[in-house]
Length: 203
Image (cartoon, rainbow, N blue to C red):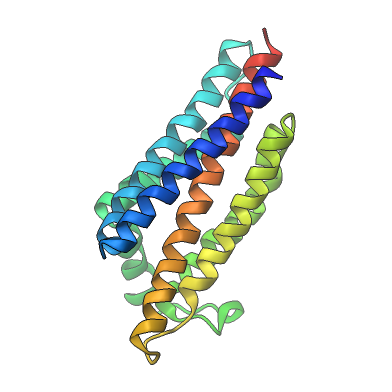
């Protein structure tokens, strides 16, 4: 019961903080600049949470868990990407320089191909990761919800809005950034619940 309360309180508290921070950014018209730092902070927290799960498993006699190593690497990449814009460099080298196309994503602009590939890889990796977090129903629920919000954020980002009015573009931008932040916070809650559950089960 104590573990359940800890997990639920973390969920409520983390989303309350997210709502407060994003409300301030929207009301002060600093969403675009603020979201960069917010997402970077969430990437760091998710990276730490993934490493914590790996550490707890190792501490309790487990091996080098492939799923948590993979997640740690993914979020470490996203941390550097937020700072160094690695995605834009990869996109420029692979798709623009060599004029590559993807027939299965004919409806997507070439500049957004990597988003489709990242989502495709996430879907493939999801069963492996779910196998590690299924001990906690909350962790599993949050992870599935995070995948759904990630898919939503990617889909929103693929929609062309250049010809639409300023009000619609502003709403689109808010919806996209909120969806992305929500997905990251759900990943964080999933990893936290998994770590708490595994630690409690090994006491």
